[in-house]
Picture 1: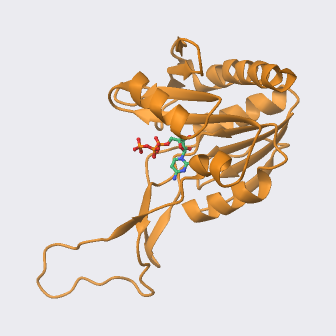
Picture 2 (picture 1 turned 180 degrees about the vertical axis):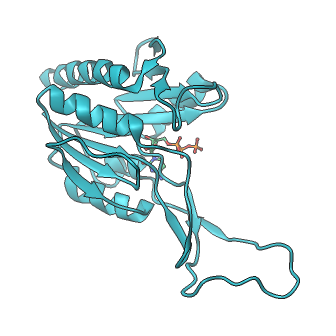
Length: 218
Ligand code: CTP
């Protein structure tokens, strides 16, 4: 199968030397790319800035901002059998990027930033790009995990939503392990045990390729 994976954080510039970002390491997305390659799939990895080396054999597209990730997904999505959106895309970016470094002025103690919403890339897959393949989203939540995840799955038109509770110590953002629950249409949520991101990626990939095959044979 042809599989597209988004991974890592995005960086939203504020001026030539500063940006807004988040704590995503990209480990989950890169582990998924590795597992997909090992299973013999053709992988396109669209990645924000990370300290990781991309697995040999992936077609790697490096981006920095949410807008660049949006454009890369838009340009590569149509031909994919499966699309997995594991990137931690910034939800907001500075509304204006200063051309010069922002200086401390006078004796003001605060700086107010105006932010604007970024493109919802996963949310655009069905509605804007007309994608009909198997669509997988992630949801990082700190409360009401299953209710929020199911609402997100439906709103973004996902075949599968992988939910993780980032309020728990030792899992999720920038950690080596993860513990997730799978949300599918018309089925009870499936909790998976806590495990390394590499082991989890193999289990997720096996599940996703089985579900995607099932969907295309219907
Ligand atoms: N996502 C995306 N583009 C965005 C924001 C998120 O593609 N601008 C994707 C993520 O890769 C993930 C899913 O959407 O697969 C969930 O992201 P999240 O930020 O948790 O969902 P939101 O709908 O933005 O809801 P909220 O932040 O309010 O929880």
